[in-house]
Length: 121
Ligand SMILES: [Zn+2]
Image 1: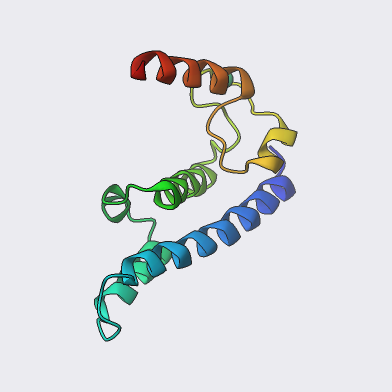
Image 2: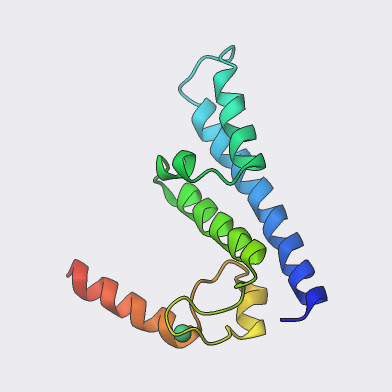
């Protein structure tokens, strides 16, 4: 992938990451006292160091999405961004534009969803 494309996706992902961290932070705050500073640190921690242990604790939709975004950012750092995790082929640009944190190409996404359905059903 070209460097300017990579930079574009990184920007998108970082924006999304910020958004999600904020949202997760609010969820964490909810149910805790407003004076509890430790919850703020959680958000900072997630924002600065893509902390896997912190994210491992997360479970709901937003948090799961945040995990995907973090994983995409890590792949950007590693230089493997844009490659399907299943078949290794490049994910279509259009797909990445719509879903910058996509892990699979469209064919594999369908296959994975099918497998999940089968496993669940
Ligand atoms: Zn694939």
